[in-house]
Amino acid sequence: MPRLSPLHWIILIVFLGFYGFAVFALTRDYYQRNASQRPAVQAQSGQPAPRTWIQDEMQGAPGSLTPLTETDIAALGRQADTLFGMRRYGEAIPYYRRILELDAANADAKNDLGLALHYIGQGATAMQVLAQGAEGAPDFQRIWLTLGFVRAQNGDFAGARAALERAQALGADSEIGTEATRLLGALKDK
Image (cartoon, rainbow, N blue to C red; front, side, top):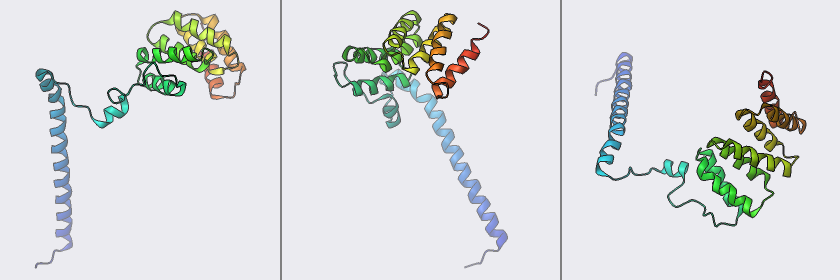
């Protein structure tokens, strides 16, 4: 068997590196091209695209939603927060409302409900829910921050200042207090 010189070894390693990169590039190109064509083919066949495990993890497997008849506030809260985190605000709202049916004084659910309502364009209702939540839990710093944010977004700058100042007064050194200070700075000219 012939012996390879160091130059031959270097050439062999470079060749194998190039070969590996070429196979990777061609495989990647194949999957990118087919991924862009696959939905059109499936749309023509009338069948939905198959779900992947990552889609199931991110969106919840079909039928995995917690039923609204559930009485476990923690389970309802997890479901609502999952939907909210996925920016499915309209779907999260019934869960927050169900939590409030079971525990009308739940300031955290009122905070999240108000924010979800704001994000779907129901600013007036959001401000009403948040104001009720802040009135019922005057020491809950986060709801004051959210109320200030939503009021500012809806043009009520005086109300926003008052709510943000309350959030700041409840703990200026906390993360929420720092955000309240930042938002107050942004409202200086308004």
